[in-house]
Every structure is written in structure tokens, then in C-alpha cells.
Length: 300
Image 1 (tube, rainbow, N blue to C red):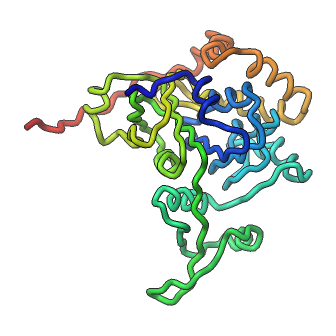
Image 2 (cartoon, rainbow, N blue to C red):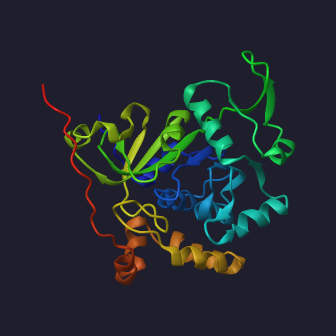
């Protein structure tokens, strides 16, 4: 049975007020279009979990969607702090939990494996242990030494952007891999956004690239350019100029609201958003093809 639907319907049906939402993707494949749709639908009291909140969670917090963030680095990559998230945390208006990158991924790995916690070797992140009571120490029953543990994270819904998927939700991604697989397997519900929806035989022709199988997917949505201003390897480049611009926009709440009014509330969907960016930006972000060598899987 096809699981393909519109992004609007997927967000309406699968993201509920008060949910813990994990928008996956590391450096690229960040599902900005889904975040913007959540804003347009005025979802509220969300717990936003991500290894790096990136601009997408700064925008969602600015729009009033979140009551809490769970993260491992809260910054505008390569620029500085996420101004809005930091301001809201410091003012006491936004709850938060902070982990190391490895601690955050360990939480997802535990959730995906169905175990209550994940042990880690002690690291130099002693301040996080002191600040976050979810870090605990237990005795390794085999060696007797102390190990650090973090609790499993099982989001209500994961949103994962991929290069291609079939209509059943079998999803393939390549380039820098982050926590997409773990987030999908740890979550109760999974929304896939894809640059392309392709026939099943294309997916089956390269099975090792399928990191997320249809059995854990609830909805798959065709959303080209979903990741802008981040990038999708092989499809379009990162919009570095926008990351710099957001630092100035987010320093002023009235400018932030004006940006949301124009670029989120003022467009119907991602197609309209991409068209509004204009041909000059499209050209700037275009990438040249660089094909991998084919793989011979053999026949029987």
C-alpha cells in the first residue's frame, strides 16, 4: 500500500501538540520544509529534539511552537549562537536538556534498540554530568569500573529528509550520514520527505543504500528542495549566505517576525518557497553531477 501523501497532510495527521519531534539530518538533509509546515499549522508545546538545532529549531521557537529543546550543540553552524533559542532559555521561557553529540546519539541508539539506557565511557564532559541529572553512573558488571549512562530517547515522531524513496517509504540517502536511521527506528511515527519518489525497482537495484525501510515509515512526501538553506548532497548546495543573514535577522524580533510572515506564513508550500527564492539563487546553489561507479550485485 502506498504511504505517499502531502507534507501538509502528514504534519496534520502525525504531529500533535505536545509531541516530542526529532527532525533528523546532520549538516545536510535537514527537513526545513517540514519545520515550516509545523509553523504554518500552529503546532504548540512541542519538545524539539536534535543533535544540532540548526536554524530550523530557532525559527520554530521564534514562531512559538516549542516548550522545550533537547540538543547537543545549539549554534548557527560556522556563525555563532542561535540567538532566539539562547534568549528564550536564558529568560526561562524555554525548557532545555543538553548532551554531548555522542550522548545524544547514544540516547537515540538506545531508543532504536529498545533498551532503557546506553552506557558510555566517561569523557571530558564532566560539566554536562553535573548540569544534567539524566547523566548517571553505574558499575560495569564485567569490569567493575564506572560507566556513564544516558536514558533512551523515543520521540513521538521523527522527520527524515532523504534523496529518494519509493511510495511505500523505503528510503535511500547518501553523503554525510547522521542519526537518521536511529531516529527513525527510535520513534513512534516516521515522516519521510524526499527529493524524488522513484519506482521500487530503483530502490531494489541498490539495496545497501536503503537505510530506512518502509516497515517503520508512516508517511512519505515528495518535497523537492526541502532542506534549503541546508543542502542535499547531489541536488543543491548549502546556502551559506542565508546562514550569515539569519544571524542578523534573528537579532531583532521584529525582523524575525517579518521573515516568518514573508517566507513561512506567506507561502503555501515548499514549491512556492523555492520559486520565491528566484533563479539567481537557484543557479548559485546548483551542483555539477559527480556519479559513483556502478556496483555489480550479481544475478542468480
